[in-house]
Image 1 (cartoon, rainbow, N blue to C red):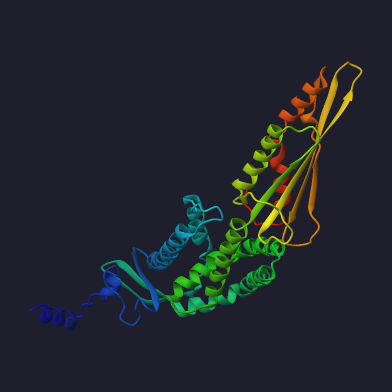
Image 2: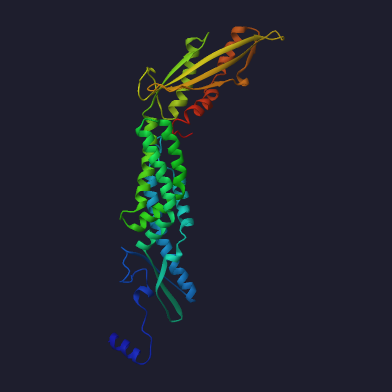
Length: 350
């Protein structure tokens, strides 16, 4: 009966209803544009342009949603170099980048549009393969630049040059920024098919995992020297240095014997220069010389000297003046110099 009515209506000059994928695209799909090869979406409105804009927006929304989901999955499972999971703020920031970086509306094509009962309908699709090709072409230079830093990092790491790896690692992190979101979009649009973006994803994973390894597997042997230091003074200063290094992810302990691979030495020498002032008091200003070296190599050590006026102490008794100056040698006084010395060598995070 319905078929007869529809045929009669057409014969009398009536307009048949739109295709289901135009009228209700949320539950119907155009048979020539399957999900495996296209992102598709429909829109409706009182004006044709309104319907088309909504169709384009729906296609964009689907892609952004998929990419955001992929970013959340990868970011949630990624550990930073101290073993803590990437926070929600990072994921949120990356999602914002997805929204702001999706500027490919010209790749979305209209495959159908009609007007029915004073309402305009439009249906649009984005070809996955074309999207991958276009976006890859636009990001080729950035991908090559990033891959070059990964290659440099691999070469340095394989030769045992930790400082060289660290420099390449930091350059790679910077080069990854313009690649991160496009790579996620390319991988999502590809739907599991191999792309050039896969190498970039492997590259950033290598940089992060190797950076973690470069710190977590290193042992620091601490040596404290200084004329007039008691065992308790030596222990206190050693604990300050140990705390700074341990919080960066290093193992602390052992001896820095020549040729010991994976072991670094942190030597701290304290001198207490004392002078008698015209005010009848002894003025003691500590000088802290710090030396860091790779026990497994013959490289020259890194050196630095801390001469902070805030460590000065005055007292009528010279022994008490020295004790007061020593008490000012805290972790806060030493840690900035330790960080400045190891940061060029190791890919640490403050």
